[in-house]
Length: 70
Image 1 (cartoon, one colour):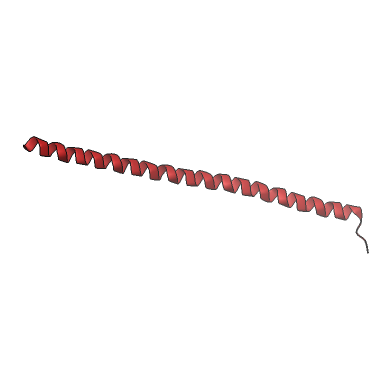
Image 2 (cartoon, one colour):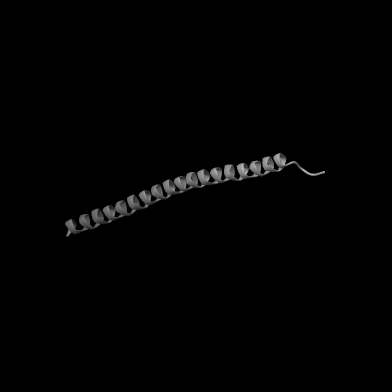
């Protein structure tokens, strides 16, 4: 029993359609994951910068207050 050309073409088209669909899903998922990771990295950097600036301001205020006592 041999398959007719229409069935073979239909099966090939179905496989290619499935592959293209999964590629679209993978690209969108990668893009969204990249956006989420980039956002998290941005907020972590902001928190680190605020901590550094806050620490430097605290050290400056302590040193300034100590210098005024002399």
